[in-house]
Length: 274
Ligand SMILES: C[S@@+](CC[C@H](N)C(=O)[O-])C[C@H]1O[C@@H](n2cnc3c(N)ncnc32)[C@H](O)[C@@H]1O
Image 1 (cartoon, rainbow, N blue to C red):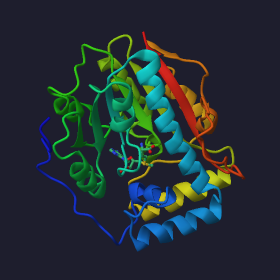
Image 2 (cartoon, helix red, strand yellow):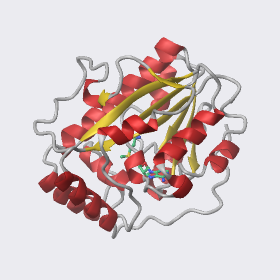
Image 3 (cartoon, protein in one colour):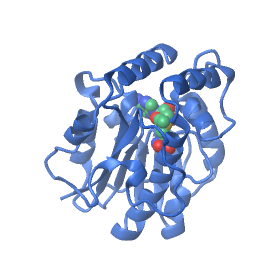
Image 4 (cartoon, helix red, strand yellow):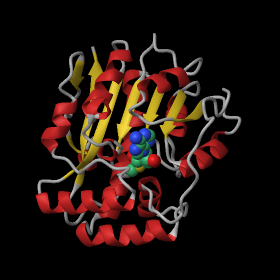
């Protein structure tokens, strides 16, 4: 696969301002983050003390569900929207362990994610990272050329990314999921989860902090009902075990410790395109 197509323009890395990708990396125990990210995480921990367990369980969910999709549905093509900084087990590694011919298109718009992603995937025959906003479906479709065959089933992943998307016009999270489903043939699957809370105080505090920290590159903490709505789309059927705190989605004995307190959690699941 050819690398870096369509990357004619890219934002510089801004170390003075936290980024959601680097904060998440710090929560996972990674070292691809700066002082501003670590300070922002400290602030977040005051509102959501269980943020580390939340992040670790979300990442474990991503690994479990990728493996499950490859094994149970035989799917070999993945589009990972909002892929994040490369970490110990990435989607292409999990998918390739099941199907050595698996192919992955990573999509992200954080300059640090793009830089590390390109370094990791340099010369990779099976995976590539595209610089695109997940709301820019046309650009993503252009970036698929020769990599992902839309006449065959695809797994479209939106794991822990839709809370970064504001509720506006055609950038609205449900509209993004809808446009993606419209591209997919029956037999494809869609995974969605995002940050939710039932405590308006927690939602407001986290949303304000993240909006301020990231200079508006964030959406909001939502509710379980909002996530149910994203799945309420023609041709989309939620698969067992349903929508839930992702910590419990086909949890296995490798799963990290649960959140001790649960001010906020990642809610979602898997649906099949019919
Ligand atoms: C919390 S991380 C999740 C990473 C990975 N999906 C996971 O669950 O382990 C969110 C990622 O989404 C990316 N992101 C946020 N908004 C985005 C957008 N509008 N378009 C593309 N990527 C976006 C961020 O840069 C970050 O890398």
